[in-house]
Length: 148
Length: 84
Image (cartoon, rainbow over all chains, first blue to last red):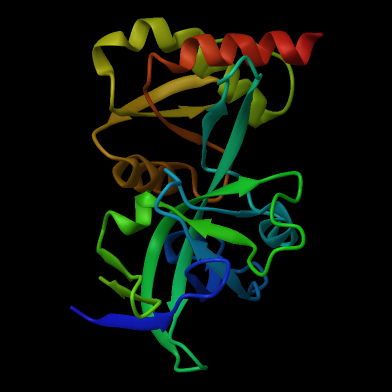
């Protein structure tokens, strides 16, 4: 089981990622222009049910959503619809070490309203991804271990 | 099962899901494939439904959704919010 060890930042466990449409989505788009991968950082958030990224990352690709889920509706607030896209999520090694692990396909929700504005990450990796592996936070050494 | 609604193709598909949800009560947890506001198939997994959608419709619009009866009230509330 390959694993990735990295220091926890002051704002949590943050990893470099690369995002693209899933390979099966790319296959049905054969003949269309090749899309450029988006590279950014994501927070590993074991409190989040689902993985999601800022809408501005997905929008330039002009993809159609594949699914949706409903969020909110708690504490009297109105529910909201979160569109889901069929993507490929690559978690990169630390310090430009290349690919650590790829999830292809991976359904990923589109977070609207710039929820990560001002933060050093543009999305969260939730339990839908973490459920496939092991995530350990070593608080004493302020390190994290991720294994799939 | 065919539903009718206005809006974009995907909005129609979401509305179709809302309308047929009560009829899918015995399929809780399965994944429904909706195309052009019509339920086309039910699958055991998200990936199976997506593969079937790509195989049949290519890059055209279709919707895959886990059947969750709990979505009913939320979709109704969302619908009311959109209409006010």
